Length: 309
Ligand SMILES: Nc1nc2c(c(=O)[nH]1)N[C@@H](CN(C=O)c1ccc(C(=O)N[C@@H](CCC(=O)O)C(=O)O)cc1)CN2
Image (cartoon, rainbow, N blue to C red; front, side, top):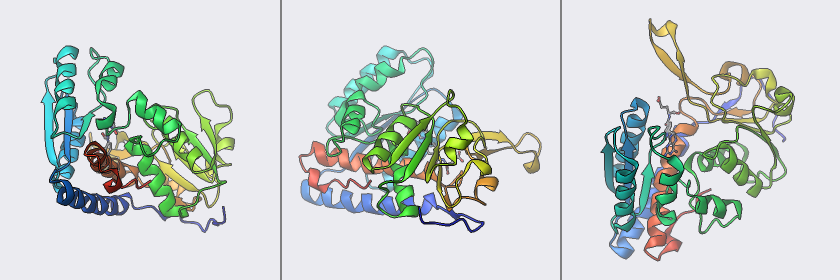
C-alpha cells in the first residue's frame, strides 16, 4: 500500500460509480435488443410489508424501467404460503420474458429461505444466492456464475479507489454471512489479496483490522469499527446499513449509519465509503448488470454480457 494518511480520506462516491455501471448496462441492453429483438426482463418478488424491503423493491423496479428492461413486481401478502411462493417462482423460471428473478430478503419466518433460494433457476438467479452460483464463484468460474450484487459492487469500489490491481494487498473482512462476507472473501482471493475473515469469535479484532490495506465491514453493528482500528492510508468499505436514533433531527427521528465510525475512520483511512451513498447504490446497479448478463447468456449471446468486476 503506497498511500499515506493525510488527515482526511477520499470519500468514495458510490452513487457516481453506480451511475457509471448503469450507463454500461444501458449500452449492453441496447446492443442485446438490436441483435436479438429481446429486452432483458427482471421479476422482483416481495413477500410481506417490511417498510425497508418495500423501498428496496420499488427502487429495483424503477431502476429496471430506467434501464429499459421488462420489469415485473410481485408483491405478495405476508400470509402467502411457501407452496404458493414456490409455485410463483416455478412460473417465473419457465417464463421466457423473465431473465432475472430476485426474491427480496428477509422472508417471513414461516417460509424456508434456503428452499426458496434453491428453487430459483441458477441461470436467472440475479442475486447470485443459489448454491450453484455460490459454487461457480468459489471455483472461479466467472463466465458461468452470477455474482452477488453487494460483494461485486464492493470490489468495484475498491478498484475505483486503489486502481485495478489489488494483488498482494492484505484484506480483512469482518463478517461471514452467506450474502456478503463469504462472497467478498471469494472475490478478494480472485484479486490475489491475502484475506483474513474476522467474526464474533475473533480475538483482538482491532489489531487484526489495523493490518488491513482493505477493510470490509459487513457485520451489522452500528459504528463498531473505530478510527484507531484503521490502518493509515487504507481503503475502508462499509457494507453496514443500521438505523439509529437521531435526536438532533427531532424527537423520534432516525438516521442510517454503517458498521464503521465514519467520523473517526475518515481521519485515518486513505479512502472510505460513506453510508448512505457508498455500497448501497452499487447493490442495485450490479443487479441491473446481472440481469443483462443473464439475458445475454439465456439468449445464447454471452459475448454481449458485460462482466464488469
Ligand atoms: N434479495 C436480496 N435481498 C436483500 C439484499 C439483496 O442484495 N438481495 N440486500 C439488502 C437490501 N438491499 C437490497 O435488496 C439494499 C440495501 C440498501 C440499498 C441502498 O441503496 N441503501 C442506501 C440507503 C437507503 C436508505 O436511506 O434507506 C445507501 O446505502 O445509500 C440498496 C439495496 C437486504 N436484502
